[in-house]
Image (cartoon, rainbow, N blue to C red; front, side, top):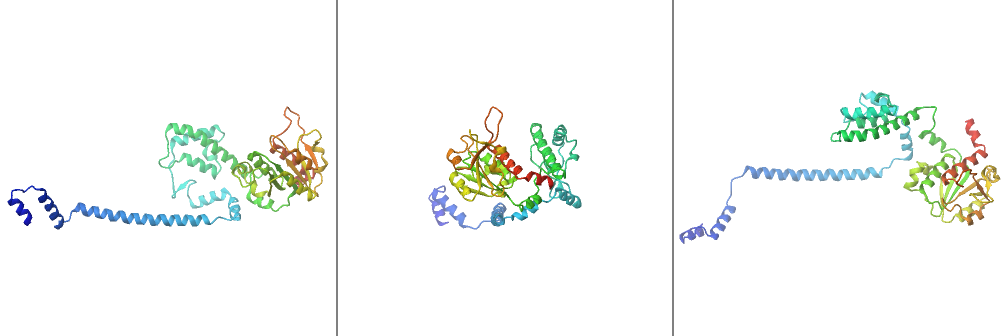
Length: 365
């Protein structure tokens, strides 16, 4: 204040020093509380509290998720879960008096355009009305499309493109559910039957794969090996060996039900099998090959048989064939002189079971 008075006496009231001193004095002096400033302080405190709470919840979620990942269900529990009939689920929903497609105990509203489009496509595929759909997955898939969530596209172009695809999926699920419920059909996997069959003895047949290049073919052979209940599959060389994603695509779950060994060299696998007294035959088209239907080496169930299948392009290696007890072939009558290796495996394995009288025992059961 004294400095300000001296400067004014000298005739310099607008000096820079005076402005600076005034600002300092204003900062130092207590000011009246501002409502705007108080609201901002409250907002900052609220943001800090919310941020701390959110961080705590996020850490708790991550810790719980990590703990959940560690708790893997047992195979027995998964098998039991697969045996639950969708009819039981439908009965439980009816008992609770809720709809088939429930979100937070409230049914989403039906979208007229979507429902009309999928109804028309289902009618074209042979499904008369939504009421004719089997309960469970078919009806749920229908409800998912006909009762969209908030924010999902519902414009005419989207509905026109999406309705045929969804109708195909719903119709397939409908046929699948009907087949599963039909007691006359046995073409659907059943967990209960699978557990019973897993205890049955295996047939004394071994499949040896000599450097197959296609993982899809190998997966298909695993599925045939499961269906024929062979002893094991032996992969050799660069043949794809479980576990593998491409094998799963065509094996459809058969990898876990068929034992598998691997040898770096096919000759080593053949010599190992022969040392155990197993007949080893190569399935290949040669001048001196024996037709599969009359090959004597396939008839001894007690001793067992190993069938060697070769590469899709080069076939069974010549050195491997020389180590085998015999070479057999599947007769062909067309332009091509061979079949796909996965098809050959199916033909050969079922011919072995026919020779051993397994077809007749299956008919008796």
